[in-house]
Image 1 (tube, rainbow, N blue to C red):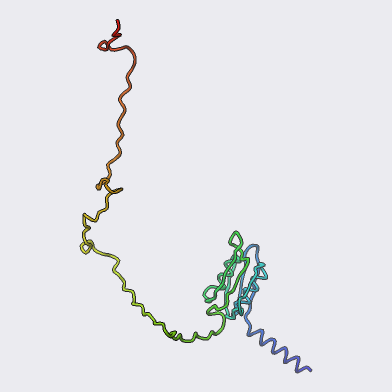
Image 2: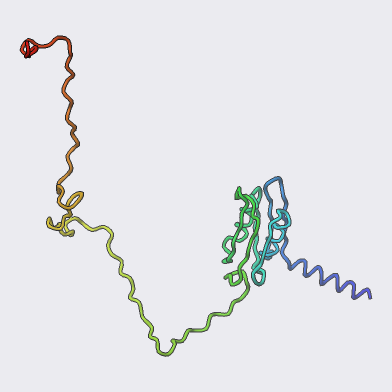
Length: 197
């Protein structure tokens, strides 16, 4: 009986030593995250417990191990730094201030963190179809010297701004100036006074 208890304790301790260590602490609106060779899913679940974030896995949770030490980061920054460089597909739903992650969706088929993925089988052409090989794109030189550029043909110039309008540059708009105002002080002597007199 005693051997079984010691053996069980040894197995539990060995499993504990092989597992990664994860510590997530909330300090006000920020988080302190320390993880050492811990599975990504474990770190995300600990962050979720501290922040109220909902984590949904579409498929198996990622098993890749991550080691991070973060201090005084927002919950959103913590999630992004844990997922950074893991090759995982995910979607975030943020709070209106973009500080807290409300929902994290981990999508199946993610690359690096989902374990080993079998390579895709080679594709075989479908009968009755033919494959088209694309020609490689040739890079054109970006800087063309003016000597190489062809001179524009004057007949190809489009009239400005409408057909039949002037083809040269527009002239400045000139408005006629009104005549100076006349004063109505006394009638001029050359003007007829009253032709009926």
